[in-house]
Image (cartoon, rainbow, N blue to C red):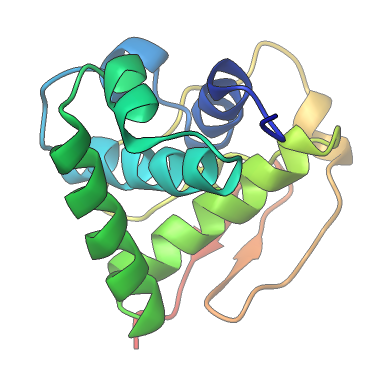
Length: 146
């Protein structure tokens, strides 16, 4: 049995990234969509879902999912800027999946996530990361690109 459903993982990544589920399932290869998509793929695999199941849920072939997971894990392993963004998205999504509040991840140079309808994120816990900080709105701001 899976730890999280694919729908739960997708909802957590949508909450953390600020992009819509439709955008994550679209054919777009724009970076502000591919990084959250890669984070979702890794979390779905951690939850025990097969490449075929993940591919169907995201509208992709299982080999595309496999390659995306490999690329994402390699980026995380070598601590590239893209890998750090994926890791931040995964951390925020895991908090959401654990029942906590997931701060939205704001990445400089990319479209900002939409503003929440209320100030619910103001009470999000403040955490300092190795490559950024959490602002007053609960967004993770990446400042160190190494």
